[in-house]
Image (cartoon, rainbow, N blue to C red; front, side):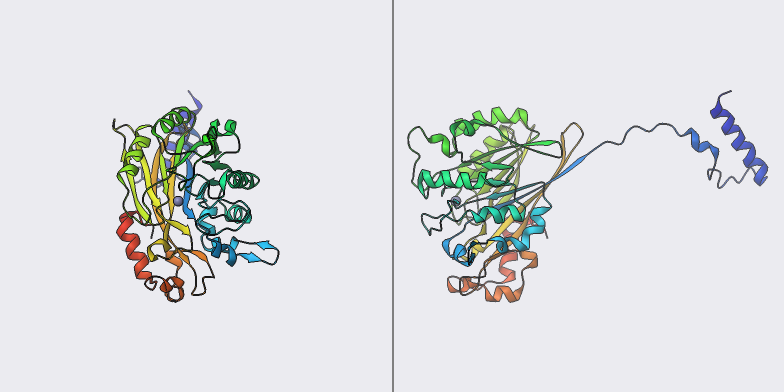
Length: 383
Ligand SMILES: [Zn+2]
């Protein structure tokens, strides 16, 4: 007779003799020796949670830099104080660095900003930075090279869209977080009328159907989740253009998991696209709007942080994806100072009252921000 059966018999005898009422075995399991016979359970499945936060145009006009001037340089960290916790909780924290960080302050239209911006972005928690924008060549190829150098000198996990060498431009950009490999691609629609010298086209990645198709085929098989930054669309327009839609569908058909759209300076919708063959879906944020700027239209004060929560199984297969947008507001005062980004949920009527936008456009109100966010994003707004 096996040990297990002996134990069970013993337990039965003990129970019967103890209570004497076999018809009422209400609490038979407590402290019973049966416990040692527990069958082996299958191992618990292991899941990996990942959070991605993406911010839009870091559009640092010279007036913003003036506001960040210190006695011995620049300090931009206070711009990002109110959104720092959100950025820091992310595994992947992306920002579109609209203005090149050449080291010098230059105003519109050929803008640039100091390298200390990159220090502030690192301090805030951003680890992926995009440099492919229509302003990439504002200070020429030399300014672009200096910007790439300044950003690469800081501990970002990935620098997207602009390159120091041709060899680098051909390397796949892969970032591993918690064992999951993230692939990145980035493109801009143009360079504000400037062009790269012949032979230097590799320096900034431009939107091009053939190039995108080739790049996607190379990177898709070697990553678990593929993120594509697209600098595209029409400025100040809340709806995506037919070109945005066409490229978004191409990226979806080629297997992109997430598209981060920037450039229009205002929010555009968040959508989930399905591939033509029905086998794949892509989360597409058409435009995150401005993260910070000194623009003068009230709609450009409202931006968003895309918040994507993913779950991967132990085979690194995506089993769950939830995406939303945290509305943000650029604040500045009537003296064009006091610049800072706030989540709209933490912005106050008192601050709105003091917003300097009233010099150029209508006065800021919380209702304006919330209503515009709801109108463009609908259910995607993270309340
Ligand atoms: Zn742009």
